[in-house]
Image (cartoon, rainbow, N blue to C red; front, side, top):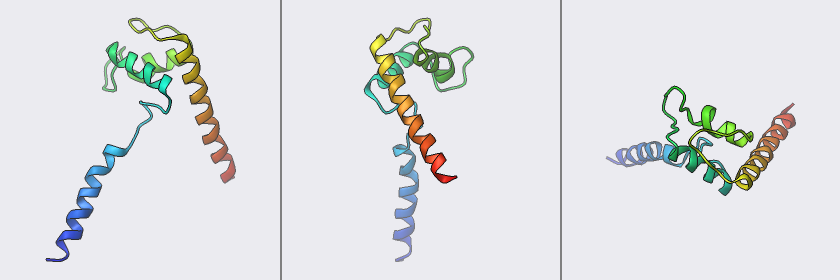
Length: 100
């Protein structure tokens, strides 16, 4: 009887964990979240759909300064998001270099 409670607790923890996981789509900065919202509002999705893929067809082109049909974002949000992404990638690169 006493072994059931820890097993139930462990199962609950394992089922709840994905809720707290973040796959980078929402990004870390407020300007990136504005871009994410614009892409989602423009019909771009994380699901497999030709020509409407979230990262490849909307988020990445916008962050790189390109225009995306049906999506409008503020230039200052794009610039701030790009800077935040560069900072995050530089931190990850430095972590990788430290392992060598």
